[in-house]
Image (cartoon, rainbow, N blue to C red):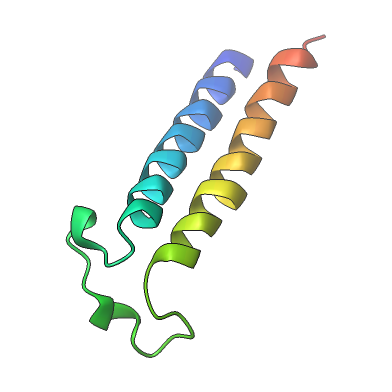
Amino acid sequence: MRVLLVLLEAFLALTAFYGGWLLVAQPDGSPLQFSVDMIKDTPFKNYFFPGLVLMLVVGGSAMVAAILLIVNHN
């Protein structure tokens, strides 16, 4: 069960890093075919900050969880 959880956490981390990087690299949303109009009613002008949050907060916490599961094996 631990191996499956590590794999799921690592997959979540990698996909969050990749999706976040795409949005940070091109904040107009073009790599994912997002329109900036989709976030016009939010405090964001483009996808840079949401991509950064996706990459660092979501991806980072998933990677930390995967590492802790690997290191803390009893």
